Image (cartoon, rainbow, N blue to C red; front, side):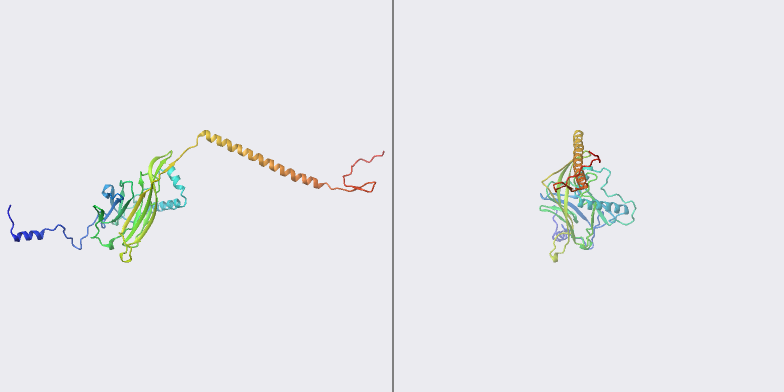
Length: 325
């Protein structure tokens, strides 16, 4: 092996750089036409589920077409009714509308506008423990204590976490089921803004005459705030969905009444109608008889008849024909 002299060795060390530097004006463009975003899951067991395991990033236009706006308006209307009438959820579970589509319809117009947003769709397999699904700037890099998102090269002024949730569900996908976050739309008022969704997932079994499946329903509370470290509002800008699995299970079943039981109840209803009618008829007859008896007694006027001994009698006189004896 040839030994290098001192001067050549020094030049070789200067050229060696394990951490190459990046120019200040360097910008890396992602498939969405903007800066890189990362979506992944980190659960309570510190298990990381990367977006590459089932999520797809698609460049789209954020503004909806007229048909898509109508679809979103109808979905938000259904959501408002579900919040007012909670029993409607059972009706939806039992009906399981096969014809009702909960997916965003495709654009009917060929927009010439360049994509200004990124649509993330797909599915992820997670453990049945509490976790955190989040979307933020920078690709996720795992490390022993979790993972980190590399966003040092992205300017905070370019952040925009305005988002629209077309569909979010846990478990088996059932057509027609409306989930609480379907149709949600949030517009960011600041570049450094955090959107948080706290989700409680409840395992649910459906057993109806139309469908039999195991899925999950969930409830959600929302919170959003602006990240301002100077004001004490710390955190990371992005969309965070913290979910927890409930230890309870809900079973929705649909049972049909046997025909013989229907006949027994029908006979009972008919008998009750006849009995009630008889009672009302007897009571009405009694009232009519009392009223008419009093009216007849009041129509006769009593008269005083003098007696030979000077007394008077209030009895009615006997009316006979005039005759001589």
